[in-house]
Image (tube, rainbow, N blue to C red; front, top):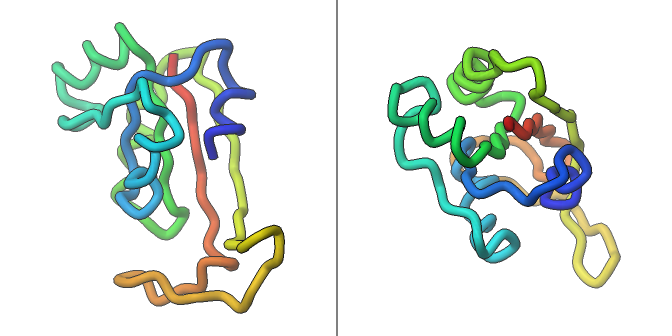
Length: 117
């Protein structure tokens, strides 16, 4: 996910928001980024996004996240990408595992991601 974000923009994102299962590990991979603690649609959220940009990562079946991301995508310079990912260990893909609370396999889950600037 971080590689895609870096391809979409010249600068690493400073803020991120989205499906918790996707964004929970981002501080490890983006040590200079912080979670956006408010809604991207709130005045405080829009001000923070205007100053720092925002990486949004949503599972495609997370309708509230997708709806918020679509509503926040109002600027012309917004870049986005749809990504399908699969879990692997040491480069080997294993059988899909279930993600808690979603009932879908990790290998079959899709994510949409956008970098707002």
